[in-house]
Structure formats: structure tokens, C-alpha cells
Image: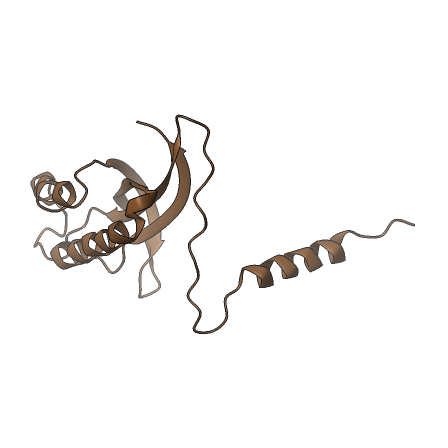
Length: 150
């Protein structure tokens, strides 16, 4: 008779999840940078997700001119080495529980390993400025280690 692999799989998942958990009050540590094949080097990829709304404007929409100003006043001085802006469409749940469908932008920044901590502070400052200028309730923040070369 064959045994079901389900209990074994569940035990592995439970073991893996407890191995990754941190104790209360303990700050999680950053994963080690990748080992990359030359000429690639490890970078922390940061993606910020925001919509194209401007809750501080009568129209409720962020104009192209406002966005260009934001790029020049905030993004270029904060990340002078560069970044990428991707136009996208998506959906998300609002704080009131309704779902919104709309257009957005993803900001992609590659941070060298020696600049991760100061640039994370810069990422927080960019998020704060987006919220201050345009009033979104949230800005998505995603990180992952990648190998890249320029």
C-alpha cells in the first residue's frame, strides 16, 4: 500500500516556516548577496508600485508634467545612477475594502551591495514624498537580490 506524501510535505513546510521565523522583538536580517558569475555583480533590486492618481489635485489624476517634475526634483537627485519606470495596469484593495482598477507606475532601482542601507533610507524618503505630493494610501515596496552588469 502506498502512503500519501501529504503529511511529509506538511511537516517540511512547517519546519521551513519555523526556521525562517524571527523571535518577537528580533529584527530580521537581510539575506546574503548572491554569488554572481563575472561580469555580473550582486545588486538589491527595489521595485516601488504606485498609481497615477493625485488625490491632492481637483482632477484626481497625476499629470505628465507633475510626474516629470517629480522625476527631476526627487528621483534624479536621490538616485543619480539611474532607475527604470515601467507603466502598468493593475488592481488593489483600498482601505475601505473596495477594489480599484487603474493605471500605475513601477519604479525599479538597482542598489549596489555597499549602498543598501543608505539607499533603503532614500527609498523611504521617496515613498514619503510620493505620499506627501499625491496622497496615495500606500506605495508597494518589493526587494530581491539579482545579478546584473552595466
